Length: 93
Image 1 (tube, rainbow, N blue to C red):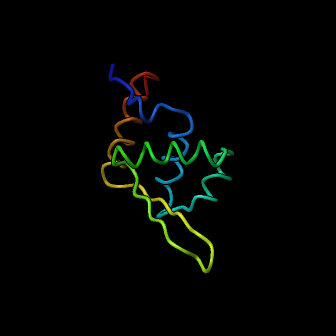
Image 2: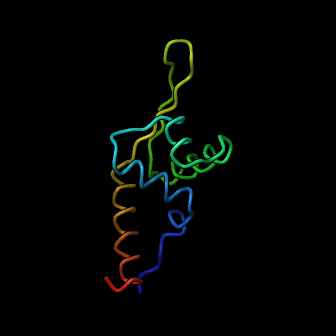
């Protein structure tokens, strides 16, 4: 059996990646609402995914408000797809 990627095996990081795989980009507020996470925990997990090269984070302003948007990188897409394939071997699919 294939090993499951420990970085993606975390519940919140897996939720973030699952959301980002289905959209072009998502902002911090959207991810926070969808994952029902705290801002602090979401920020830490986004940083871990960014450090691994799985997501790109862009910070900017929307009017007078700060805006953080995230998108999955090609490396992140590949890692996620490999994770799903590895998971399938555990499920005998």
